[in-house]
Length: 288
Image (cartoon, rainbow, N blue to C red; front, side):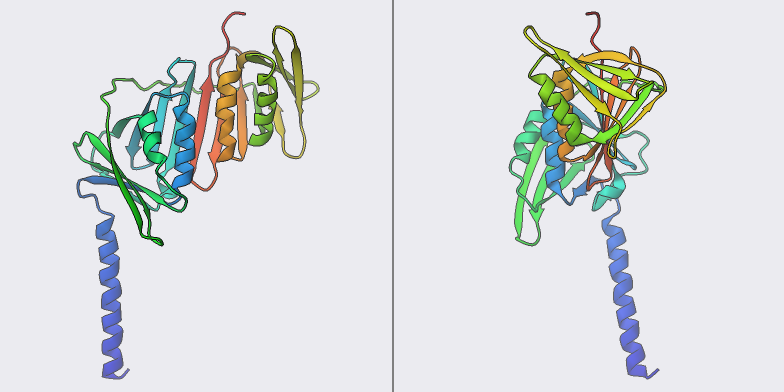
């Protein structure tokens, strides 16, 4: 190889090495946790939904990603969210610290800030070690738009609720829009819905009753609905909570429903376009 050509190749190789080293440096923790969500609109939709039932969201950040686990204000339901690290375009976190980073955030204030987000903007979340604030930056590098906000953190003493592993009697997988439609219809009739599983005929009855009317909607197995029944179940749940959480179909196209006698119903949504999952646990109605 001619000397001149060799020199050019060496310079290019040297530049590439410097760029790689620079990128690695950028992703090193320097006292500030940085999380970047490329499609900020999905995060906004999730937070807007959770705001309907949560006053305070406890965000737990560790090397796996972001978790949220909180009881709703009435203690009827528990919400779990997990956004995997792989779903973020940037994730800088202090992997050497023993404890997870917990951020208690007032949901209404957070959603007020998220109203300022416009389509095409990414969200960058920043927290300096020891700070009582969290920073939010909305940015679109194509248009040059840039907005920065600071949000005060809360001192929340809420304890983490442990959830025992249960083997459920029935699992239903269906379209989120189908499930939402059933709940919307029944919400016009009453305040609660009874779910009854028929093992022999492999269907699920959704029933609701009001003062002047009652209704039954049946879900059967088909191309987009799978029902696995181990044992028959009959439980009653709040339509208000079910209908609220069923709005998750706007960012999770399919829902898995888990049922067990005398246990909370679980709704599980895999979040489209982000590596993440949302779970809702809703307690059955006690007495009658």
